[in-house]
Length: 70
Image (cartoon, rainbow, N blue to C red; front, side, top):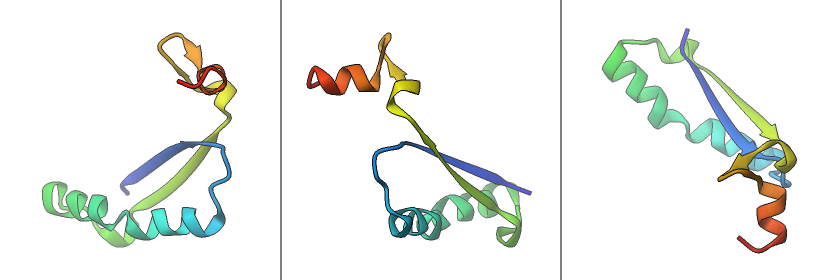
């Protein structure tokens, strides 16, 4: 069973936007079908929302980067 995980920062993505992400993941699902022969009916998609305090780039949190305008 293929498992696709999308991680985004928790910054107000609506339920509708997340549903659209899941719907449009068809391209990735098709890659799994074409390359690995996986069944698209059993492909699982999850969305993890991560607080910006828990996501870092270049040695600092996203919260800190956003505060300084980076």
